[in-house]
Length: 168
Image 1 (cartoon, rainbow, N blue to C red):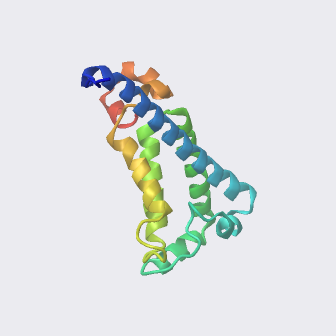
Image 2: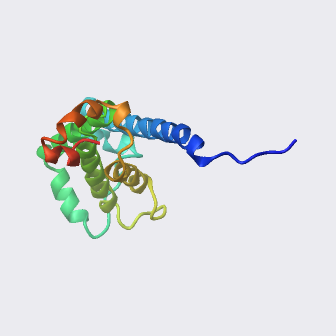
């Protein structure tokens, strides 16, 4: 039996759909993680829940920016911003609505969490770094239109040019 080489044009649509599905799953997973973060901070006592969460949130602030972050995190306003912005980012990512805007917020939040723990104890690549890369992924590529509510906003992109920077 001989094997023949498949023409790449016939393989591409299937792989594009599969890649779109994988990106959809990544987007929804990031959204669920962010929603879980906000709900747990809100229901388990705010900063008191900080040490229990691990993973997404830095468990110990250290490094050159420690005084700055400790001053910020003593504020109930900053706690509210973390809770409600992570909820908004999560909803944006799960629904696929204003995906790029949600990705910008998520990436900035992960940078803040990453910088709060410099130098990292367990290597330079940690959860924050990986989540940052995942959020940046949705800033760079846009094949998830059919899998989110941004799909319905595409028709307004021609009239309102700013939408291309907000929807994914």
